[in-house]
Length: 401
Image (cartoon, rainbow, N blue to C red; front, side, top):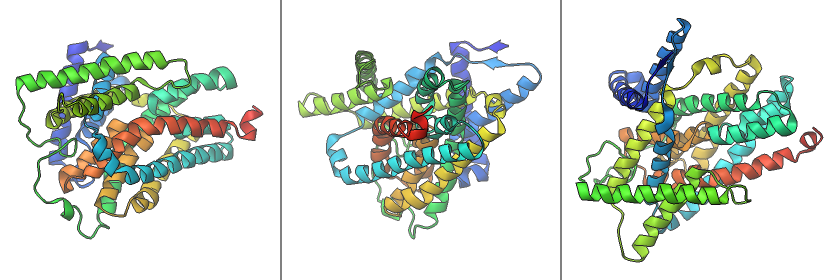
């Protein structure tokens, strides 16, 4: 066992990002299908570690930085959310929310139906649906424990985490190819976005942005307040009907900070700097998450469960192509939204942002996509997912278990 401490893990994550950039730059296949750089580098390292495990050498990373990085990313999402802009995109947010809700219903119906066809417990089918895929590791672990304690499903938590890991990998891999396929259907892909303008938000992370030491300190302070306030709010809500994941509370505090300070005329958030720090947090978070994947857990999945997850991946791609893309307008923005939907429909919101960045870096910005996806993927989806899951658990064959 080779254990890397905090600093060793940070060095490894940085090297993963440099490796990913080098791979995408040199391998046309990765560029053609818009594979995000952290996904490319992280998977290569994860495969290398899988090979090392075959010769009885395992590398363990210190992942203590992973959660703060994820929370910092969501804080910057909140600090970038301008209520006035959100009002302009109100209808689009509502339509996209319908598409997301539709996927949750389809994922669970597919999981339950296929589980019964394969002779598995329908609860395992539900576990491989929106619980672990759209919900991610946190939701999967929470419901896994519930399924074990209340319904007696063996190894439910382990299955949920393995499914979430599978989704994280595939969510980062299929978003780019889906967007590429859809953009080919757009008559003038990105043409309406070619008017020169200052890079904004998370649309073009590699654009240069002028910052100063003092403005950096101000932005760090805003992010820190969002982290502390979100953590306190999440702790206060635990055990109540309003309980929410910490990252949702951090995002919410960020939204309040940005818009409250602006409304009072006290401070205007430096959006370019917020996006720089957000992109750094996002890239490092994804690098650590992907390079520390235990791919042998996926390899150990029983064949029926693996079939379930493979079918869910296919359903996600088809849903993005035939539903999300069409109801969002069948244009360039819709293609970017479809790529983002693949990211958090199988994995997580950071994966969705990485998918969209890989597309917009090549074809041009999509402001509406980066306005809608973070809010829906990080905030609304968790609330709706709980409602959908509980409605499924109220079905007769679950009640009788």
